[in-house]
Amino acid sequence: KQTKVSTDREGVFVTNTQEDISKIRNISIIAHIDAGKTTCTERMLYYAGAVENPGEVHYGNTVMDYMEQERKRGITIRAATIAFNWEGHQINLIDTPGHVDFTAEVERSLRVVDGAVAIFDSMQGVETQSETVWMQANKFRIPRLGFINKLDRTGASVQLTLDSIKRRLKVEPLLVNVPGSDNSLLKGIIDLPSMHYIEYLDEKGKMVNIDRIERGHGMYERAMEYRNTLIEQLANFDEKIADEYLSGVPVDEIPQETIEEAIRSAIMTQKSVALFCGSALKNKGVQPLLDAIVNYLPSPEKIVAKGKNALTNEEIIRNPSKKEKLCALAFKVVNDKEKGLVTFFRVYSGILKNRQRILNSNLNKPERIQSLFRMKADEAQILTDIGVGDIGAMTGCKDIRSGDTILEEGDTERIILEGVKMPPAVFF
Ligand code: GDP
Image 1 (cartoon, helix red, strand yellow):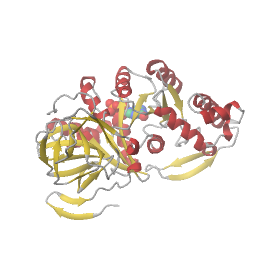
Image 2 (spheres, protein in one colour):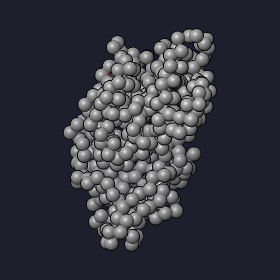
Image 3 (cartoon, helix red, strand yellow):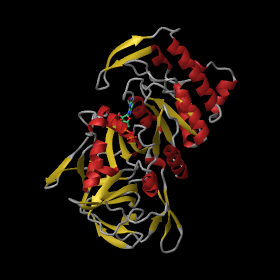
Image 4 (spheres, protein in one colour):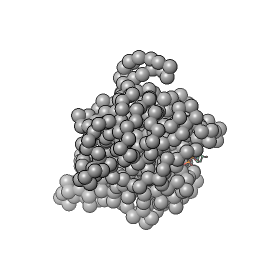
């Protein structure tokens, strides 16, 4: 629900649309170059209704490509984050550069996300760069989902991908859905009733028809095998599942909610990754992934910001509450030709208001926000405020660098958030 407040030259002001912190997901997509990050992002934006047409990579008209061109032209504000809605949740997608040369930049982005999706090319399994970024994500203890892409290609193999994840990333891959073989999306191994059906979807992802698959159909048996494996794996992470499994409860009688809960705790340990398959039809099948982002990855509601007082070196925490004093972290600063310096930040506590005077805690220097906004697909949405857990961008700050902590002006408790040592701002 958006409330129009007033308009000015910059467009329509809306208040922060995300009041409920449990509905926010701050995520990054990590992948080896060419695994399909751009394509998947486009599909997500399309199915989420954020863009009208799914961009095709080879025509060079995708939002991501567009961002790449803008980056080259110096208009970089679109490159850092995109927000879109899925099932009543706000997903903030924070871009990580696809190139190995940008290690520091990748880390700055990973510092502010609460979850990540790793995309694997099912013909290649884990590739060098996915391994590198995976290790960086380990450093920040980020819970992860995986998406097995390009399943339509000859030589694609779910098993190869699973084996290679186990061997190279040293985590337990939990396969949660199986690919549909025609124009269908089978929801899952854990979602057994849907295993009896194939949903036929139109271009927009709306279900137009549904077919019942009789028991005895190979697909169902295969899913049951996968489900057996999944339950066995989960028994190592979750006592409730272990109890049920060891006491001989048939795997199809273990409630879906119990399995989902076990998957959530398994991925929170980072010793495991929950995997979702794309469709065996080219570029289809991101909807189960979107559902999974909302269902399995954590919201910011339990993320407590830790830091030290710049003056006393005393440890300080800021709780993820609107009532706490403001505490935010700048994670990217870009020089935009039109807007000047744009600072991207994540709010860990309190609320940041447009035109507010703030304090750069690292430099002990006040600044004034000139405009506050969020990128929604390909448009900047001007905001009056942006609250705890959310990610936004602002202009008007001259000396804030990525990695700096942002507080209210006059806050005497000079917290500086812990994090990676960030290099100075990047200018394109
Ligand atoms: P990125 O480098 O990770 O952003 O990868 P892109 O999204 O640009 O994809 C690389 C190439 O793989 C492009 O030519 C895409 O059209 C192609 N591609 C992406 N996903 C799929 C898929 O599911 N099936 C097939 N056959 N091709 C794909």
